Length: 140
Image 1: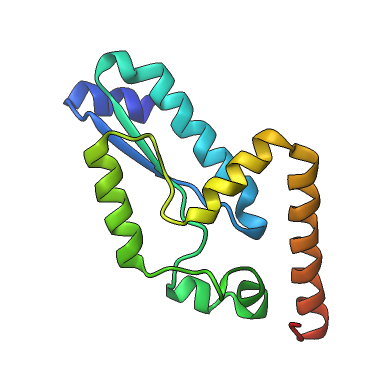
Image 2: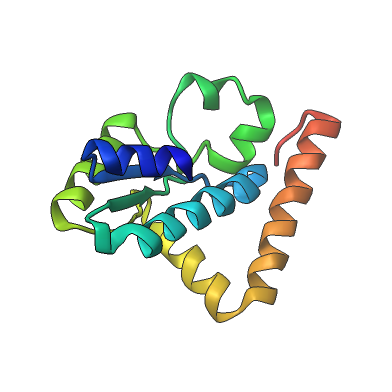
């Protein structure tokens, strides 16, 4: 919070918060997104523009180093870093708060809001697949 005030005093007006929404990162993503929402709601009248980009999976060394569990969750759907950058630039140009480079993430948001129990069951099934791969080393 003090950092945000200092940025505003310096004249900074744009802030971005990455949020991750895959697998075990859901908690971190929710925290980052909540903070970004708070920043936008609290400081918009002072000219601060906040963008929250939520890629599901990005083909980076971090994903490559995540082992079999990362493959279970993201191997088939991960996108290139350039796609994330393009989505971010487009979202900033359009003035959008929530920037979703992966189309399926919008579906997850809608499911979470519309049928939280179903969304939680799906997240738990994914976690079970991750744990199975970590335990056996096999992905089916």
